[in-house]
Structure formats: structure tokens, C-alpha cells
Length: 78
Image (cartoon, rainbow, N blue to C red; front, side, top):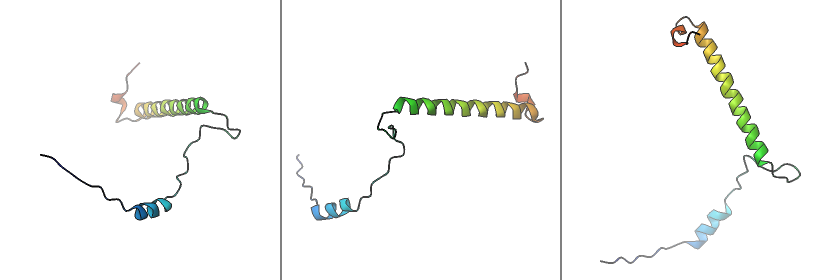
């Protein structure tokens, strides 16, 4: 058994669609205003921010559990 096929492309339609494309702006650039690459600094700063927020969330939830009479049984007693 064999199969023969043909792909038909409407080049004019494809060209018209391509012309209508809009540029997607970058969400984050890893270069500063001078053009220097700051990828490692950006990633490091983001990591520290996420770590800080995570710690704050854990601390506030532990405090909420300790102070909630219906949740105190969830807290480890030290």
C-alpha cells in the first residue's frame, strides 16, 4: 500500500496573515539600560524575593494556626 498526497498552500493568504501579525513585547529583559547582560542578577533577585515571600507566608500561617482555637491542634507544641 502506498500513499501520495499534496499540500496546497495559499501563499497570498499566508502573506496577508503574516502582515497582520503584531509584535509581542518582551515581558522581561536580561539587559540593563547600557546593554549589559544582567541575567544572573535578575534570577538571583527573583529567587531571593520568592524565598522571602515563602518564609513570610509560612510564618504568618503558623502564627494563624497557633492563635486559632480551632486550629491549635495542628501546631506542634515545643
